[in-house]
Image (tube, helix red, strand yellow):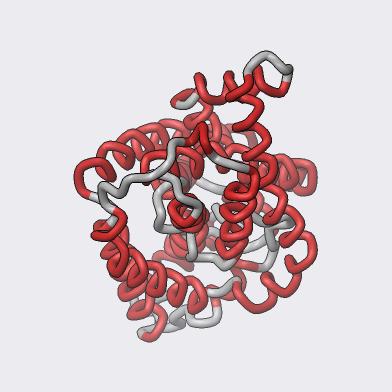
Length: 310
């Protein structure tokens, strides 16, 4: 999900302004009926779907925040602090997935912090430097971001813009030569971290911003993708920890440990599959498919909004 210091509590409310009120519309009727039955609860299958969406989209350059916003509305999950907290806390599953898949890199960085690995120390410094811009930017501009950007149309705009950008540059970056991750300097890491701030606009995608930032910093595509995954451990971990401290009691009161566990487990498994698939796909085919997916998502949601289905 997009990095931000204080994930907004009103984001889902923006999606309700175009909900269809006609009783004969099946999708609208489905959403209202589910919401009425689960005013303060979440079914296990809703938790499962949200966990799968989170895990599958978190590390792909398609924006997990945008997908979760739309999915919550389609499932009829009432908006509020608990719903927003749930969408953020289940990121922990995706974090654990990357910790497992990149455990050697993570262990090397940890040894570097202890002064026992020169390459690990360099990677750890780069990750911290890249994390700082988003942390500072989020604290300074969180309220403005919440007020102006957390709605369905900003998400659609970001999806479309990112899709076009990917299609324009996809062929240029496929198989592109570049530096290895071990050569990343703190200045290059700062550039990546600064570009990551654009991902605070829902729909931009943290992964897309950091991958493109890595390419601009001179990294090879594979190295840029790996750094994006590793940086996500800090960015997503900070957001998850903050939300647990801020809204953990409300989250447990509304949904309970079972739904939280289901979402976590689904995000964990699906994130592992998505990361493995993405690395293999990028090596063979590049990023074009993600550009088309973003444009398709923007088109479908636009139609649903204008027709009153969302």
